[in-house]
Amino acid sequence: MSEVVVLGAVGTIGNIIVRDLVESGVEVIGADLDFKRLDQLKNQINNKNLKICPLDIRNHEASKDVLKSAKVCVNATNYKFNTEVMKIAAEAKVDVLDLGGLYTVTKEQLKLDPFMKEAGVLSIPGMGSDPGVSNILSRYGVEMLDHAEEIHIRYGSTTTGATFPFAIDTILDEATKNAIVVRNGQLLEIPPLSHEEETKFYETIGVQTTYSILHSELATLPISFPQVKEITYKDTWDPSTIKFIRILEHMGLLNDHQPDNKVSARQKLVSFLRESISENPSWGTDELMVEVRGLKGGKKATVKFELLCGWQEAWNVNALAYVTSIPASIVAQMLLNKEIEGKGVKPPEQCIDPAKFVSYLTQKNVTLVSTLCESAYI
Image 1: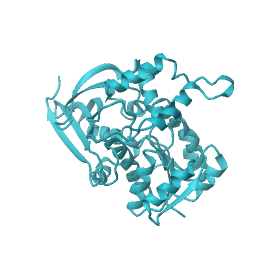
Image 2: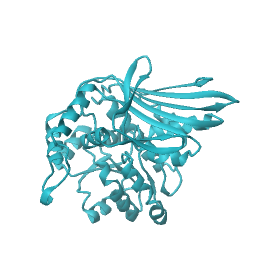
Image 3: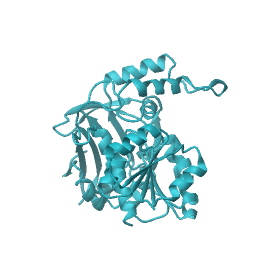
Image 4: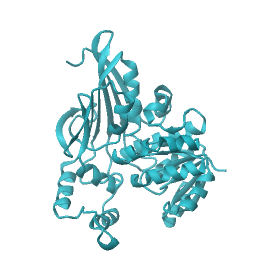
């Protein structure tokens, strides 16, 4: 029996997860619909710990058979498959984690908690960089304060140009679907790419404009930390990327309606973009910043975490892809080592020990800067 099966193994994120697991000594089954690219991945990694398996995850029985041959499943496919993969994992009696459900799908995943508990399986939704590391660092910050009042998550990058550094479908959804924030303890919808903010990142990143977008942290953090009355997520976007997507939307090319079950305009566009625009942009430095504000020792205080990651020359991958993939690999290994307990559907902040996770993460060619400032906000 292999230890981990990675679904979507040849994708931008999936192939790095496979590589890190294999180089960590884990036996892996890389599964994907694209057998040609699977074979290329096998030859590229060239390690006896990797087996490959052509698989269409829409084939329920075939997928269940593949998952049964492993102990943990890492789902690196499109987030729209998350709930179906969870159901297959439950039948196969295999713990499963994914990279996030862009809020809406994450909410549906949480509803499967009784089903997963009955199956005796743990599902961790959203275990990449953000969501994932952002959730865990949010918990870390909350635990460092006597009382947490606000959580603010920001992502910055020095990479420029109209690029699609990960799943094109997901980026289009982030840019066009309403974002979610928590204000005064209430979940509110706001327009996508709104509430612009000049965010001061670490000195290597500098000041960048960030925008509110739909993100999975807002589906779980309000449940995990009901005492926190303000939660926001904002990401930096290159203006040329925003302009490009606005033009596509105005032209009706993002319409996902399928007339007579034919391919939609959006599906055709995504297929075209995959072939014509790189998902692997040039060198840049990225930062995930998590600020937790509240009270400590009777004073206002802010805990700030800044996770910094650069271009990974050895693997020839950009910072975003690397920092999204490595956390999934780490948590898969923690599951194998019985370092994470629980059954059902548990987001990262509810089941993963922050200190232990950070101890693994900081061995992976990233830098984590943490500060605690009293009287840091009014």
